Amino acid sequence: MVPPVPTKDNVDLECFLVTKHSWKGKYKRILSIGTAGISTYNPDKFDLTNRWTYSDIIAAAPNKSNIPNEFVLTIKKDKKLDSIKLSSEYRNDILSSILKYYKEFADKPKNVQRFNGYKYHWSGITLPTVLEVTPCSLDQLDPTTNELLTSYMYKDIEGIIGISDYEGGIVMAYGGFSRLHLFKADNHHEIVQNIAQRSSQFLSIETKILKSQITLDQFERQRFGKFSDDQFQTSMTEFTVQKISNRHPEPVKRILCLTETTLLERDPQTYSVCTLRPLSDVFALIRDKDNLQKFCIEYKNGIVYSMSTPKSSHGNASSFGGASTGGRSADPKEKLRRIPSVQPGALICQHLIKEGTYGRIYAGKLGDSCDVLIKTVVDGASLTQVACLLQDASMLIGVAHLNVLPPLLANTDLPGPPEIAYPYPSKGNLKIFLQKSREMNSPLSTRQLVEFGLHVSKGLAHLHSLGIIHKDIATRNCYLDIDAHVKICDNALSRDLFPDDYHCVGDNENRPLKWMALESLQKKYFYTTYSDIWSLGVFFWELATLAMPPFEEVDIFELMPYLADGFRLGQPINCPDEFFTVMSCCWLVEPKQRPSFPQLVAYLQDFHEDLGKYI
Image 1 (cartoon, helix red, strand yellow):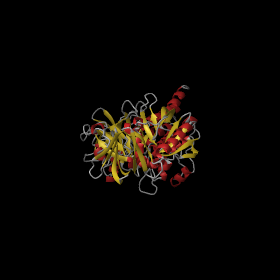
Image 2 (image 1 turned 90 degrees about the vertical axis):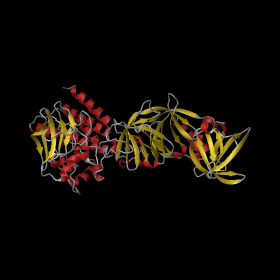
Image 3 (image 1 turned 180 degrees about the vertical axis):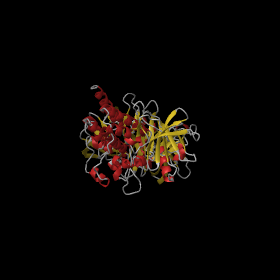
Image 4 (image 1 turned 135 degrees about the vertical axis):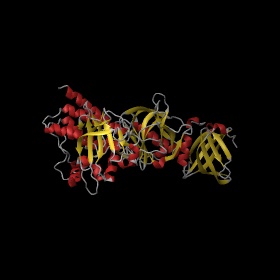
């Protein structure tokens, strides 16, 4: 027996049950791949039977006779070579894990090649990288330090695809669900040939190289393979985290999102998906025993990501125990209790701004000096109507942004109806403000309207960064303060106060159907960040028409087929082409083709500045 490596120098990382073939016969062994070498154990007693350092290994390869599942370890023993024949249904996994340490082998594979190239980033930019073709993987290296960033194992490559409109591009379908990765290199054909050669030589894997090509647009739309559709990316729960990664010198802020089938990370600024993994790939969540704010996500392939949660963040008590549902709480009354409450009589309703069947909005005061906006219901309101007020008003609690109007305080325990108070927006409801401007024939300048659109785009971008999907972006749910800043508010009481904007089709719930995205209408009111972008386009149209009702000529029962046939809202009179182009882009059928918030904000900012040059 080869003298074993001292146990303290080796940590077992992966274990496989294998069959050892020898002149004595066949018998079971536990093959363990560790940090310093390979070990075998007796599965009956778990006693160590052998251990070799990686420097003892000459080669690890499939059996030359190409018998399924068989492989051979060639070990340097004194001045001789010893061949150990093994078999396992996990042969490719075992060989891939062993070959990760090929640089430590006694007989190192020759001619490992490196290529300068670029990786297409989730943000749409290309980042310089170094690609190294190893015996078991295509490795992506940091171009400045040559440190390993990630490995794409040959055993997990489902195919390599050409891309017709991206010169030098290589698309790799990977990971068991056809996740697409895009690289670019001058000698991309040579890289593909090397991958095919190495995967065959070291693993007996025939890499599929597809003759058909895709476009960059197809790549963008199918980037996450079978999980590319919105239904796999719509969160049930979201948490703000700091991700600790060797790719970044400092922790990076991410939104960790749990869906019914996937775990994904989003960028807080753009809400773009950075990474996505199916839940079936998650092996364990491990909380740090010394710091409850830290935890690790370990995947079945051994990759571990470390993260930490802030002690206090929107929707995040703990990734293990708390839950955020995009701004919704299971008990909105309890959520409202998290904001300050005042004594009965402290809120004074002075002036009725708008009333519906059961809802009321007042201008009032808190004490003697503080002006507030108060949402409440009449004494005879039903429990369902009260519950709707509390549920809808709880959406924006704790949100701090110049273009968002969250509740300031709430009274939910008074003998009378609940009262929700907001910072007072002195110029009132935006829809009413625009309608009065139209009725008084005092239209606002295009520059002012574009600025309103810019304000709401920024506010909505912030909500999405917190994991909040508003679902009802419209002028009726926005307010204007004394400095002409537009602020997004919740939609509490909007169904009652603006009944003409809501319709009921097929069930008993009124919805803002004429503001809703086509996919939301088709998929039984399925909401995403993309559907909010569609509604934002209708909001822009409201601005340009000074709050005219959209689709006034379309029967509500014909709206869905009308949109499905490609019809949209027309260009308003005196609306610049530049502004209408933004609206039209928000109404594209394919949700992912709609503009992102960085694009919207940049475009509107530039257009706003250009309009100022002509004043």
